[in-house]
Length: 139
Ligand SMILES: [Zn+2]
Image 1: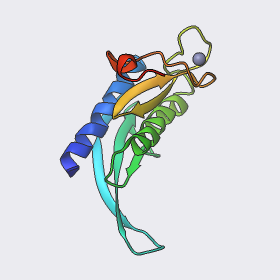
Image 2: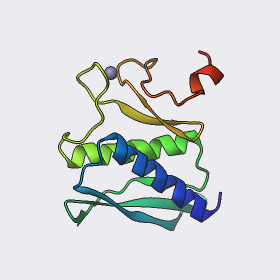
Image 3: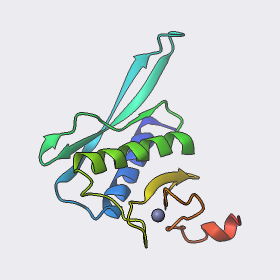
Image 4: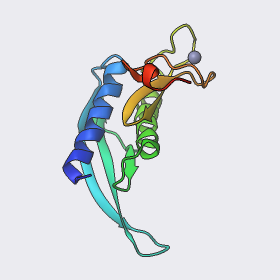
């Protein structure tokens, strides 16, 4: 995946999460920044992409990061969990996406490149099946 399309994908996911938590006005996506680090074990150059966020006009200190350049479901899920964690923790739990019918928030994950939300206490409960997903993936 090219650098530009990876950055675009991460920004899309972050925007979708912000929409799902009600587009709180105190949160802004500034952009995404790509950097590299050297793996101390083997000397490999490892790319990573950080999402730049601001909260109440201040840059956020701990930034959600996708490590590597292969945005598979596992890497994207780790990324969306960090984005969501940052939103929830930095707003003291005020910003979240409620789990329908429950008193806790739902949790984001990525399946086949798409953002989904699930219940943290019932792994079989998904409340936003995308159109056609359930038909194509009978459990
Ligand atoms: Zn729930």
